[in-house]
Image (cartoon, rainbow, N blue to C red):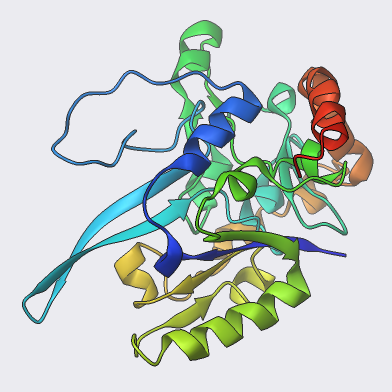
Length: 268
């Protein structure tokens, strides 16, 4: 029943339709940026940017080519962020596997930022100004509201090349392995990333180069300190589905009609 997304970087053309779709669906504002001499924009994830495409120039043996990778929360099966959150603001859906964030519960401790092996969470600078103590900014929620109504995540639907595929995790693992075998005929360093890392990621990648070239840790691990700070041992905060349901808040209600209309029109 666990869901996942399989991202084939070799099929990505850097169009950033996934970025736009994420912003549109979650009603996230654009960010003011400046020309930094690169097509990659915005420069980083933030409270208002939950997914972005990383642009890299890769040169080898006198050749130069663009590499693209969609970056977002990796939705780990064994998530350090959930393990260390003292307020229950981060929870993992027990069957689907998504890591969902309840901003209203966040106390701004910053543990999720400190302990994430993928360096994904960002503190919200605006909340710091308003509240005197920052909160973690929003992050990819796997379009939980869409998925729970039988729709695919917005980013996967918007991808024009099929570089992002959504489905049952077990099936995507098989597909990912097969795709790597095929890709190795022309890219000998091709590899499948996410099958086993941190208990298995729900954002998995077919890579045509080594993980570090795509700014991914080769062997991501749960930090020892994160294990020591296990929230279940020192707060008693429940991390079940009921807590996760509250995380959708008013945003899910506001988009319920959009979901119904999309299914009615057969746009899926």
